[in-house]
Image (cartoon, rainbow, N blue to C red):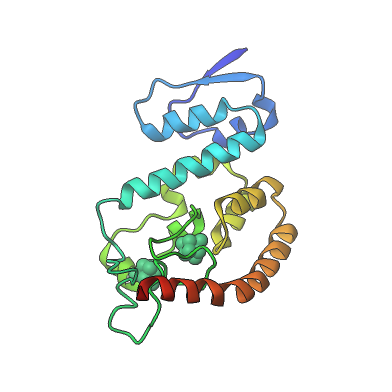
Length: 196
Ligand code: SF4
Ligand code: SF4
């Protein structure tokens, strides 16, 4: 296999295409992002590569925010919920079936990229453009990723693998319907759990 060195971010748009399926990528860089990009380019199975990119981006965000306490959760309520008349202690500020009293039960990259104004004004928050490995996704996949809130890791990955806006739209529609039915029960259980 022909070897290609990836020592900067040039040509990624070409390297990620099928034209380079039979090339091996290497890097001399010590930049973690370039190392991860090189690893991803060496994963020739499309779905496995998408999973690697997704999980790496999630890990990068978790690591970046790990010492920042951006949302200042106390007993399952974030800074925006505390002091308001919000009665939910759910580890997340939104209406979603993956809430739990210990926080989100899944790993949703779109949600990890979202921050409300108080957080945004206090911290440097990361955007998609700050995560170089996401350059390996297509424009359509990045668009899906921008709006794929309220979904499990597996469902976001499914949306990215299928990569069709129409499929994503239909899945989100059914997800909203499902949430409307399931959420009251989840919240009731959470409230009972917290009242024990
Ligand atoms: S982003 Fe804002 S609203 Fe959402 S959990 Fe954090 S503090 Fe709360
Ligand atoms: S998937 Fe998103 S909206 Fe749902 S609980 Fe997790 S962080 Fe909150």
